[in-house]
Length: 348
Figure 1 (tube, rainbow, N blue to C red):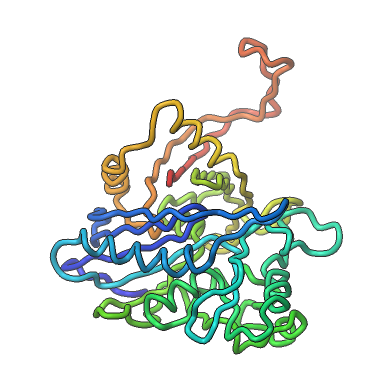
Figure 2: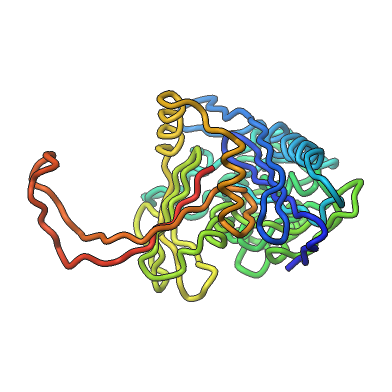
């Protein structure tokens, strides 16, 4: 992992659905600066979901880094790392500038033939098929984090976790030449892959190291914990994501299964737009949140996060129960004895 000096800060940049966020944190986890650069989500037709990749994946991270650096006092940042949502893909020219839509998770252009429930395995591979056909002469086909890293440092690099979400294009160790060719691309058109936290380059115009980040949800899990069987991790941003920690990998129709940072544990969960709907409702009812309070909340978490989100954790007694009616006083029928579960949540 990239070392962090106590004499400086590390900057984390997160490319999200509706904005790019950046935080500067010291080695004790104290957030010293925070910015948010909003961008548009485009829905050009039913079942299509995309970004202007140049706006959201290239210019947004550059602006976020510039603004957060202006707020940082003392020595210049020691390192910068980028996290992003997955899957995503765009075509880039020889300078690393995107020129096709930035395809996002859930877009129909990632739909896999057959009866697979959503989210379907191979969504990123179908993104590549569509993008390669739309831009056959592209210099590269990159996800959001590769576009940002190239703009920040000249290095088109992603982490292993992001690459793994591109199965079958990435087989767990390297890009699969045959799988790429079947979708109209070559391995040379895909970004370099490094382990999470590797020193992958140097940020332009600074002495700061560019460290590889990770998938946004994985970064949240690192910070929040949710390490034990039955723990639940809830991420409430524009997209609401809920993960349940399970002792071993298993497939559930319509949900994702991803490796936990503590093998052989896995997490099962899925995404919903209910997060944005809920946060929008809260803003309308009580008004937008105070960014200053958000910074203090993050500082109390005690550990920095790439996305800079506040962490909360509680233990609750839960039971598998149902009611015969919608009345709050109706008796509950429980399938088993109550159990103790730790619930962690992060609020963007």
